[in-house]
Amino acid sequence: MHKIRNGKLECTDDHRIDHFLSTARTGYLGLADGDIPYVVPLNFIWMNEAIYFHGAAQGRKIEVIQANPNGCFTVSEDYGTMVSPIPAKTDTAYMSVMLFGGLEPVNDIEEATAAMQGMLDKYVPGYYEQSLSQSHLQKYRSSLGSHTLVFKLTPNARTAKENQLNSQFSFYEGRKVEMDI
Image (cartoon, rainbow, N blue to C red; front, side, top):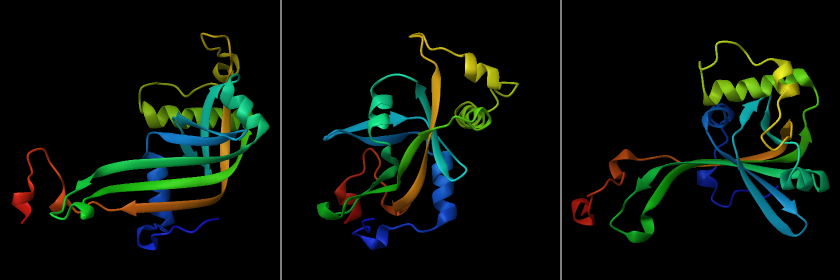
């Protein structure tokens, strides 16, 4: 595993990382399609120390995972830009986490249903009065006729970086360098 070059930005607080992964909305699954990188934006849930996502049981993503189940899942959130009268010191506040590991389909219907329920709870909390049933997951077919697969990436390594926002230097529309000199 490569070390983070700028160590002062490394985040090692497991609670902070877990909270971030639980609340961030979009992740990017990086795969190797032969010698071509392939990155897919996905909704996801962080549960049981793993990333869960779903998709159609057919298509390029499935073919690539079957050929090489090693993946990198990256989550990043932008918290704003911080200004400086010195252009090279203008910076972005953010947090990012990269998780590396093997991808596998979730074949256990209880685990797959729990992952799908977790995504519903995350993205549309309180919308449904009843929990997702296992039969819904087993019977559902997309408009193209494919059933849904749930996958998980259990990380064997992870890195996290953050540059916390200093609100005193937050950029806003109309802010000019003259105001900061």
